[in-house]
Length: 440
Image (cartoon, rainbow, N blue to C red; front, side, top):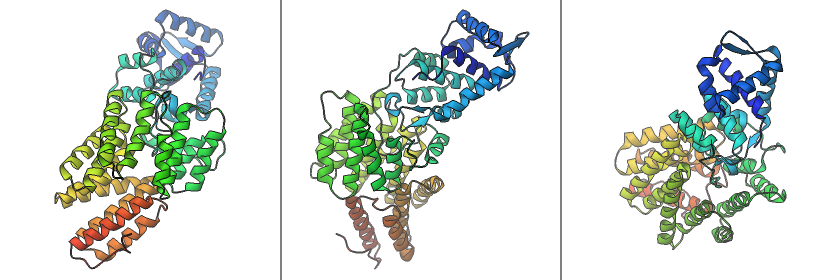
């Protein structure tokens, strides 16, 4: 992705550094060189060119932008709001603008280095870059710039993960999903999470209709369409669509992502052991490749599966692994989905206070997020189960009714049956007379 030429990236670097006060070029030359990936002598040559163009000037050792230079830099910064980073090439959870990525970085050197990475490396692993920024390692940042880290052509789009930072997520969520200029894959994912299934399907098909979609985009769209079939109560068709994606031309991580989706369906059928084995293998692949959010997803699948089969110890083990993987990448969004399952383990262990704290934390997050109705539905279902435990029968019925309707057709037909059966089982175990509908 060539955003701007090298000379203008140097100008942008001066703009970023001078925002925090006067730029002492002698003091900051080495840091600027590192983040711009140029030698000090080459940097001085660029600075000379910018001076001749009346874009920068200096007084003593301090460097500053001229009026013309400031306007050029500001215009450049404004253009970043219209440039989207390809999530497939750069290992991001969804389309996001360069502006949103830059705005989430605290230090000017990080913002400069990000622009350099995106400009020089056509498929840099930006998720890895952001992790490095959190660790504050300039040396590791240089490795990314020098292309020693390459993006792995894979993305988890089963949900829109907040694996970058909350402001990026909120910024993208504010975009209208009816805006034809937005990325259709991103729109499809937003619509799916909001329960707007027809709109999601329409936009998934827009990606395929473009005629220039990448192999990974085709995989993501096909799995998205398979998710829709599954949500609508047709797991057999969903399974067939996922199996058809297997191809020797796929890379290892593309196949791992396909296998993760395949295993999640298998674990709801008679082939439980096969599904569990595949999911564990996928988790290991994602762990070794540094895709912690995908690893967390696999571990969460396993934890929920074990819990639903009343295997509490392994359920807790895998859910805690999922939560730790989320914390490794600061993935607040996925972490709160994990909390929606881990709280039930605490409840099963008799830790009512701990369960309440964990559930309340997830509820606060999804209520603030507001648009992820699937997450809110999960909170309402869990709240209903907790209310049964506390003898609040009427409140439990109200919460359960909201859980099943707030994001329809979420949850899926299969999960809907599981939720109703679980609600009624726990009600019966507590000696409560309440029954929600009839178990299908």
